[in-house]
Amino acid sequence: MLAERGVLVSGNWKMNENHFEALKLVQELGALLLAGTLPPGREVSLHPPFTSLRTVQTAVESDHIPVALGAQNCHWEDRGAYTGEVSAEMLAKLNVRYVITGHSERRQYFGETDEVVARKIDAILRHGMVPIVCVGETLAEREAGDAETKVRGQVRAALEGRPTEVVASVVLAYEPIWAIGTGRTATPADAQEMCAAIRSEVGHFAPSATAAIRVQYGGSVTPETAEELLAGEDIDGFLVGGASLDAQRLVSIVRARA
Image 1: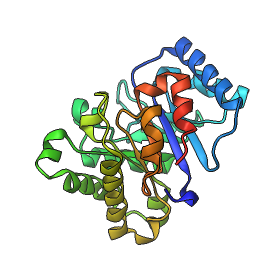
Image 2 (image 1 turned 120 degrees about the vertical axis):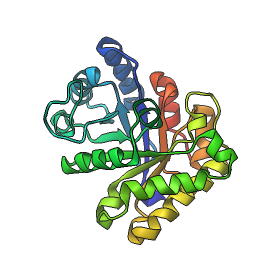
Image 3 (image 1 turned 180 degrees about the horizontal axis):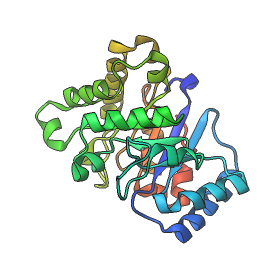
């Protein structure tokens, strides 16, 4: 891991925590984070459900909790007849900084294509926020030897043709789909190999961005696996699912040393 890129640990709460539970969790997390110092260059983002965003925002800002507010998704349009959707413009008004897009669960359960993900990236960037763009392969694709081809293709579809400075500002999150919520974790060598391939792919269309772009690993990350994973030269943090619902476990991951 190159120190100048910094490390971003993002807690994705998924469809968990109503706004009462969210307030309790963020206050617990804040107390733990404020009780000690973070490693240099370490950043934390929290991604609660939409119904808890305002609650978490208020707690973070009033208690000076050292985390950035994040969202789990957005629509590609700013306004319109899209019942049930939330726009990037709305998120920006809540001081959201990071927005996850292309998560494997969105692709698998809601049919989101590379084209949809690219449009959402456009919207996130248009409103001054940072996309966390998820890429990853299924177990079948990995066993067939197609994992790297699949992931490189997703990276290209998301970022190719964008200005170099924009590419450099984006966060890419490698999520092997077979390791999400299963308790299975890619080995540190596997994770590093794919994160290096992701950075290499960026180099094909935005070579000046490769040293700056941050690449996270996501897939059943725990306090027990974080340190060894973070030692990978091309791993710049984590997209944490289940463990982010436990304040102590998340803080242990945040404080992991490379």
